[in-house]
Length: 181
Image 1 (cartoon, rainbow, N blue to C red):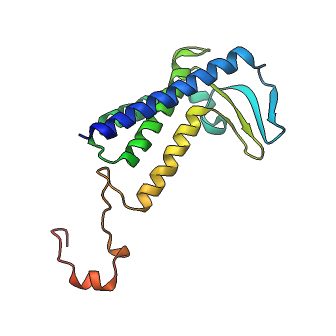
Image 2: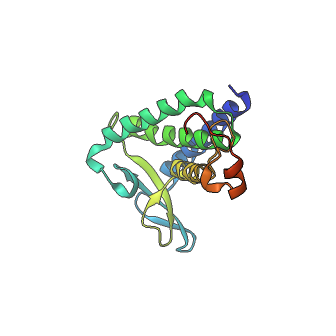
Image 3: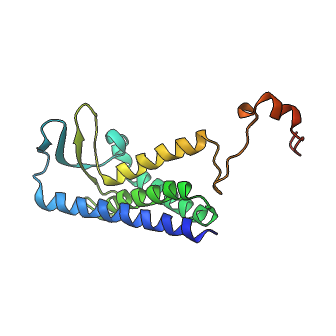
């Protein structure tokens, strides 16, 4: 177990969760419901809405399923977190954990009821078809880092997995066979 990596997972999860919940509190207390408030004209607006579904309001009738999926994601992240040795992967896990906790908190504890609560969304960007929140930003950012790490074949321990597609012809000719060959 890497204490630095695990500490980063916990720190990022707490920061993402804390900022998400703080901004949602400020929005619900200070913004009018379902009315856009320009921040940078039409480029960036604060638009307080309650989302009963997933991204783009998909699965609006299945909020309890989304709650169960989010809780499963949280459980998987917590299960795998002690195996992480890489700070980059710790960033992925921390942001996913914080984002998932942020939105599942809404689903569990906001109206209309436990497990079917509506997620508070409030960030609207010009030409983007959805309104989102800080938890969503955390999850999407984590997926961006995930894609980069996956494309670079970086394992949870931080080492790059050698792949024959990326070896030079000389390396392929001098390579010793592995047990999988």
